[in-house]
Length: 526
Image (tube, rainbow, N blue to C red; front, side, top):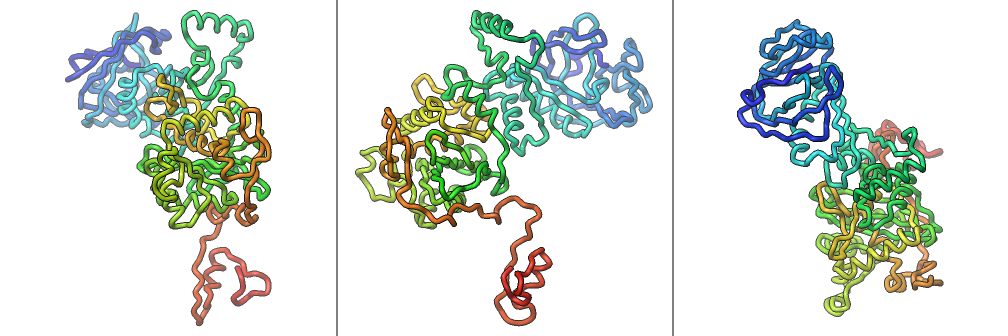
C-alpha cells in the first residue's frame, strides 16, 4: 500500500493530467483521484520481495509497513522489513534511470492506494484503455512495459470498449486476434452484451434508444466493434459473419506468411489479386487467392502477407504460388513497386497470365509490356472497390476466413471526397483489402471478357459463370510439400554424381531420415 508523497518537491520536471472517469483501489474500496503526475527523477530504488515480485519507485515514495497507518519513505526501508500484505523485503537496489515516473494525485478521503506489486501479485489492469489520450498512454506504456516484461510473474490486462481504430488498444487486440507473432504473449477475449445476465430484448431496445438520443453508437458502446458505422465499405452484420467463420489455416508456407485454408483442386478455377509494398516494414506485399469456380460462393482459399519482402523476391513467391493454383490470372496493381514484380514474373519467369488494364489514353502509348498490370488511378480504384462491394456486400457471395482481412475490412472507410481507403491512424493498413479488390476485379465484365469464356450474365451485366479458355494440367494444382513448416521433415541433401565410395551420398541421406526405395539398395531412388 502506498501513500501520496510530497510529489512536486520530489520531481525535477512534471506535468499533471486531470482525471474525471477513473477510480483507484484503496483499503476502503475504489476512490476517486484528481489525476496523474508524470515527471522526471532519475533516482530509483528496486525492492525485491521474498516471493520474487519487485517494485520500482523513487526514494521518497511512501509504503505502509505492516499496518495501514505506518507509512515510511522507501529510502528508509531495510532488508528484512515487512510491508503491508505481509511482504518481506529480500533485496534493495539503488540505481539511476532516465525513464519518466508516475504518481497518483489526491486520492479522496484517505490519500492512500494499493501500489501494483504489493497486494495484486504484480497484476496491472488498464481499464477503458482505448479512451486514454494517446500521448498519455504512449508515455505510460514506454515506461511501464520494460518493468512488466522483466518479471515472469507479472500479468497485464487491458480492458476497453472500442473507441475506433488506430489506438494502442486496437493494435494489441487486433494483433492478438489474428495471431501475429509480435503479440504472441497476449490472449484476446471478448464479452458480448447478451452474455451479461439481465440483458435481453427490452434492455437492447431501451439502451439503443437512449444512445441514439445522445448521438452515440450501440455498436461502439456495447457491440465490441471497431467498425466505423455508416462509413465502412462492408456492413457490420457481414463483418460479424466473417469474424464468426474465420479460422486457422490448415497449412502455412514461407515462415507463416503464406496461409492455406483449402487445398488446390484441379477441377476448380482460381484467380490471384496482388498488392505490392516496398518491403520496409510498413505496407505489406499481399496476394489473395480466390476460388471463382462458383460465383455464388467465392472462397478465399489462401493468402500471402509480408511487409519485409522486397518486390523482386515477392515476384518469385508469386511465381511459385501460380504453379500451385493452376497458373491462374494475376491481377497486380502496377503502380510504384508493382512494376518490379511484373517485370520479375514476365522477364525472369516468363509468366504470361497477367491482367492488363489501363486508361485508354495510357493504353494507346508504349509497348505491350509497359501495360501489364492494373494502373490504379481514381477511376480504376473506384471501379474496383465498387465491384468488390457488389460481390461481398450486395450479393454476399464471398467467404473470408482470414481474420487479418476481416480486421482491415472493418477499418476500410469512405472519405468525404468519395475515395475509399484505410482509416487514418497508426497501425491501420488496407493492403489485404486492396489485394482482395484486385482479385475480384477479374469479374469486371470488360476484364472477364478478355480472359475467360462467359456463358451467362446476371441482370446487372456481371458474369454468372466464367470458364477458363485453356485447361491446365493437374500437376499445377499441387502444394509443394518442401515449403510447408514441418519440423520433422528431413533436410534436403546434395547427391554427388562422381564415382568412388558412396558415390550418391546414400549413407548421408539415410542418416538424415531418408529410406531407400525397394530394390534399390545401392543407388536407387529415395
